[in-house]
Length: 359
Image (cartoon, rainbow, N blue to C red):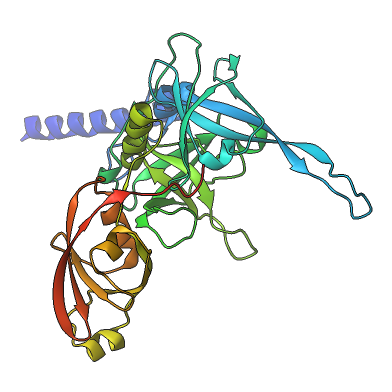
């Protein structure tokens, strides 16, 4: 019995001494404690490693534009030079950079400053105004390229960081989360599939990198929702999976080649309109018109037709129809099932190349 009491006393004293030592360590040397992870993710509490990996690939862009400045009393047109700034991302070691089309569009002069301070005038390899992307190239030897991630794997709630040149403040980093994916109907670009984030995106961030906690590029920061007293923390980025396809097309063709069916002014149907037409489910878009001489007109489609499916895919919205059409290649046979005056019909449209809407 005496031995048991002695053993318990020894254990109790050891625990007390251990807790006292631990308290002193926390008080005097908190740096010796292990990094605390973010609950549920296993990620580090600091994102410095992710920034160290990706920030060297984020460049600053400075542009000059000639803007008409014609006072009312002046008969002769006058111009002034307008300067602005943005960001770009080095996507490979050969010197290719991605930015937004609106950052460099109509610029009389473009200068790129890399993270190490090197400055160059880039070649504009090609642009795609319909996704607001542009591909540039500089000849400065081997460059630090960002690691390309997979935007399809993003989930709402994932932590993301925006890196860029807001208001000329180079290498600025802001943190947020993915608020939504697949955002459209914002009237920012023709083809919209935005990542929504609450990471601060300000003037000059456009064209910069949206990265994940691994330091991988998941999007190109593009725009913020119109700012007013009641709006903040709503920004949009182009998903890197879309960027990857646009860059590949520009490298090969100097532009993006998309299919076009010639469906003019399609409109989404309301539930009441579907019920009146006898359409089951929430499918169908109404053709406001078809382009004269275009693929749809040549295949017999008419104003007032309802498109139910394209190549077997049920059509739920005009946005979906536009994306499906753009995903075809010129010369492809595209089967369309529609409804005309209550009767279902099918026709085959030969896709053409989508006309360029802006250069």
